[in-house]
Image 1 (cartoon, helix red, strand yellow):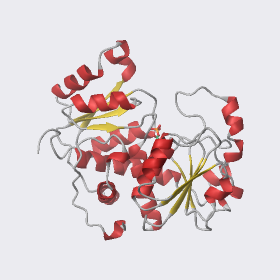
Image 2 (cartoon, rainbow, N blue to C red; image 1 turned 90 degrees about the vertical axis):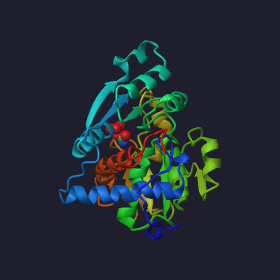
Image 3 (cartoon, rainbow, N blue to C red; image 1 turned 45 degrees about the vertical axis):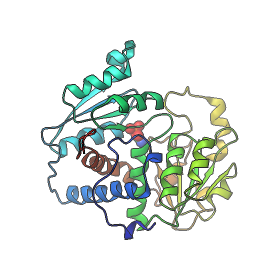
Image 4 (cartoon, rainbow, N blue to C red; image 1 turned 90 degrees about the horizontal axis):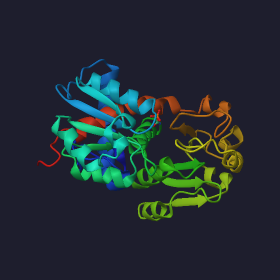
Amino acid sequence: MDINKYSPKFKVKGKDLLHLADLTAEEIFEFLYAAKAMKKKYKVGETVNLLHGKTIGLLFGNVSTRTRISFELGIRQMGGDSIFLSRQITQLSRGESVRDTAVMLGRYGLAGIVLRGFPDAELEEFAQYSEIPVINGINDTSHPLQVLSDLFTVWEKKGKLDNLKIAYVGDGNNVANTLIMGCTKCDMTVAIASPNGYSPAKSVVERGMQFGDILITDNVAEAVKDADIVYTDVFISMNDEDDEKKKAKFAKFRVTPEVMAFAKPDALFMHCMPIRRGEEVSAEVADGPQSIMYDQAENRLHLNKAALALLLSREKHGA
Ligand code: CP
């Protein structure tokens, strides 16, 4: 479906945002149109007071720069307040149940909560017992806010989403999984080049194939051929040890100018950041004219604000 022919209603059916697999193409477009509106207002200095009197909880189980700062500042820009909680300093770290935490945090009057680093089972349990909207700020299987922000960035830069080819080179991790779901739903073609043993989850690929074309290969040139977008992520994800063996396996999967040459001449380079120049991408590409990684990072702010506006506009168990 062509996003430019879609008329936004600025409403989404769901009240939680756990995985892009849960959203339809139309719901993805709602987030993207809302981000566009938020960005426009931000750029002209127009105040958006949608969170006046509301407090959002940020309960994080791992470190963050972009997700935390873009939420904290975005909430402030919308007239709201936030409470940051490291999982380590809550009773969750001493075995208090997810269920009890979820029920209790809603009773204190939080309007919504962003969870980061919660495994799928915990995330789903939290959402089940929480009276307030729950947003997945990344976990081992998906990174929905990042990919919504990336889709918004591609739309800004290319003017469309459908019929574009995105080539992801590297570890078939949470970002790759989420790109598969988000991009196929937006009628983009997806190609993933990973070393043997590091391809995205089979279940995700099979599900994504219901929506669009996906190529899984260990051949970088084949994946990147005629791509409109080349995307990569760090080889060593959060919580992994610095694994020299893994780094060696990934050496051929570095995005270099030679790799970019397989893509279309106007191809864009994307990275969700943080990056390690010289590992998954050469500095020449990361800091070169095709790179839009800082736009992606900026758009986390506008997309997060959009997500809060959409998800908090209704009571979770209400109408
Ligand atoms: N891309 C991303 O989620 O950045 P942080 O880990 O800094 O939040």
